[in-house]
Length: 156
Image (cartoon, rainbow, N blue to C red; front, side, top):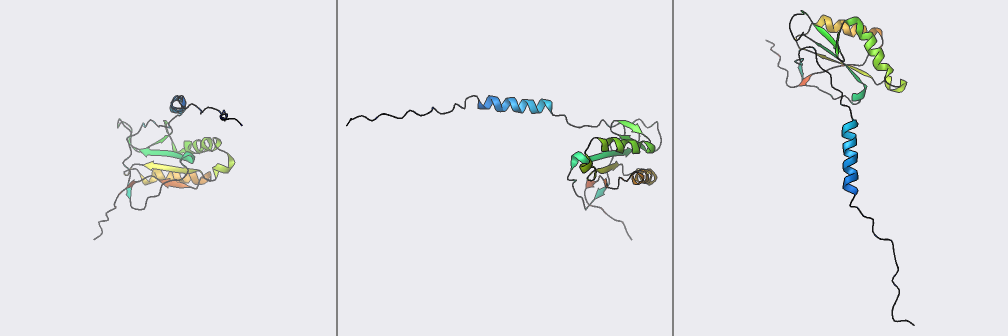
């Protein structure tokens, strides 16, 4: 018998020295390649009405937003409608919704929501016209954007 036992040679430990480099490369890649959806408002920033019962939307990627408000420069009287980055008429809402539906699969179309961000001083007639146009093309899921806060009723 021998006095000395042979040591079993195993694999050396995996070096993790380059792991932070890989993590930062991935982080940098996703930061550069991600596109944040921003809309350049051509109307005044809507002062949203306040509400007490507010619910967040679940599928934010399936939300199409229609902005309603006054002109920034004040030259145009009445309410303006903005779809994506351009000023539009009520009759343009139909083509806007159709183009938004074309971006998604048929399964997702059932979950699509139209969000109306209207200034609190916007005309009810403009919003009613938009709702009528949405009803005609069977876009029945509508949400109204509000700011969370208390609503005070002055009833005497």
